[in-house]
Length: 438
Ligand SMILES: Cc1cc2nc3c(=O)[nH]c(=O)nc-3n(C[C@H](O)[C@H](O)[C@H](O)COP(=O)(O)OP(=O)(O)OC[C@H]3O[C@@H](n4cnc5c(N)ncnc54)[C@H](O)[C@@H]3O)c2cc1C
Image (cartoon, rainbow, N blue to C red; front, side, top):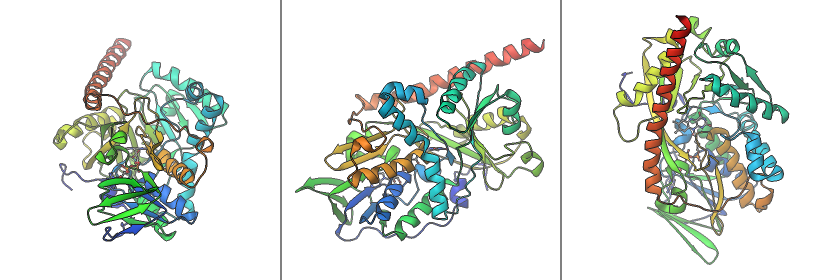
């Protein structure tokens, strides 16, 4: 494999996808779902299990976007800590929101077990290593808040973090035993297979190009045929196109990029992530890393905007590997790939009724493996008549970002700014370390 090739490790190692038809004639369904990633397919699976007649329309192929490109880290929780969510939404709504979010990893691993999805599931936990002493303050509070709620979480000392990650770079951290890893593309393909077995009709290369509402029915046009149904679920996340402008304009999209090394030697694997946890650290532009089933190290972080050459995209990642794992100096890199993350203003995912019986779930801020699967379940329940107030997740008003184009530009500036902040912090740490040694 060339060092310069853009190819996803997941595409090279996933279970085969299924050849799916395109829409070629007028169809009817009880629910039409637009988008075949975790959100859309989890919704389809849960609806079909309940006996509903579902059509899924996918512009590309199943899992070709974020759900087949991500780091495969099953992360419990949102960016905000549980107390913050309860303060924001009140103890009742906030408390149920925290429980819903916390149940995400169970849902993922239960579906994998129930449908025997061969996606290399590992559930030994997710670690957040602290890049600085300052980050440990927030981590201690986070652990205390989750502990109060009975979650299987532990604070890690500097030594414990070094033992579990195989890196001496971190000051400490915490482990959330509810988390884990999957082969993300195999997982999404497995969801599609399960949904089809329950009767979902899934069409690939069938982009929804127009939505019209009349006489209590939605009509979704694709280039070669349309689908009519009383309910439509929009599950397009960062890849939302102009079909529903308000949804596209609610998020900014930020590139995330990953590299994967050649398989590590048995000797290295004895010390690097020996228990196979996944990790996302606390830098402003966080680095996320894990091993795959063959012992390759994957390193991910924010990517470069636009069509930059791989060398530019990968530079930060090679540096991150060298910094976190100096013992991997000189290791060859075999896979490079990236995708788009949908970021919301307040880092909370959105569950919305965009128009009458046009429901949408999106905006996972880089934590979508568990949350998008859970969102699919919530969308399935909501579209089957469960009242919004009983879903355990707040339904919010549609509020597109004013001056969306500027926000998108602002995201680029913010990424550069945060990169500089992290760079400065690293220089300061090096200086104080060398003073300490002097
Ligand atoms: C590089 C990267 C790394 C990440 N790492 C992690 C991680 O380790 N852990 C984690 O929890 N999360 C991670 N995420 C986030 C996670 O992947 C996403 O939140 C999640 O996959 C979103 O799922 P989804 O189904 O909502 O969207 P997607 O998987 O993006 O699916 C949306 C689908 O809608 C389709 N679509 C769009 N418009 C139309 C249309 N008009 N008609 C028909 N179809 C349409 C698209 O083709 C696409 O297939 C990462 C994301 C990226 C990009």
